[in-house]
Image 1 (cartoon, rainbow, N blue to C red):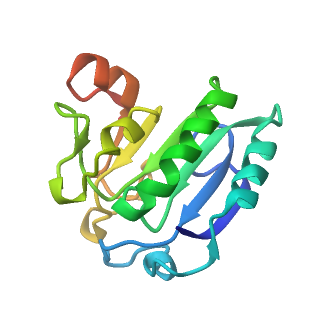
Image 2 (spheres, rainbow, N blue to C red; image 1 turned 90 degrees about the vertical axis):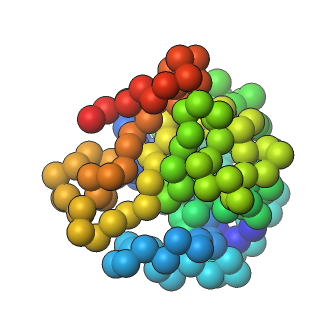
Image 3 (cartoon, rainbow, N blue to C red; image 1 turned 30 degrees about the vertical axis):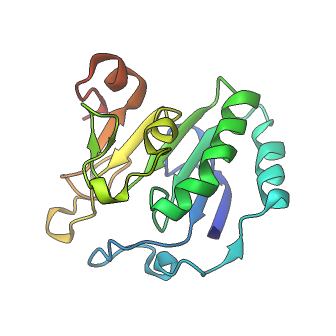
Length: 175
């Protein structure tokens, strides 16, 4: 997996001060995407052990609320493979820090996987279960609304993943 950039003190992509990892690679091709340069799976830098350790080191700062995953598309199958062990380690070291993930795919609250079943892998459900908040759905230019908090278009949902998995029905983190 490659990543486009890392924002070390981000306040726009989740609550509190966060580290935001923008992974590379996306097949959605949303009209007027804010990060079109990250569509290419080979764009940016390789996400290696050194990069992962640097993020983990920075997450130890008391003022950092958690980690946000954006893209590109974090839940593209090839990105899931690299993110899963990393997110497991984040949760192990920092169980009280929140993990937000932004995806253009749609979460299926009944199965705990993606509605785009061809994008599910053997680890999709386990990876999503590590998230606290999932912002799902493609960005749709015609539904763009700059007044929405933590999302770009009104079709997107800000989902409380843990409550949703417990109840097997979508529980919104915020409207």
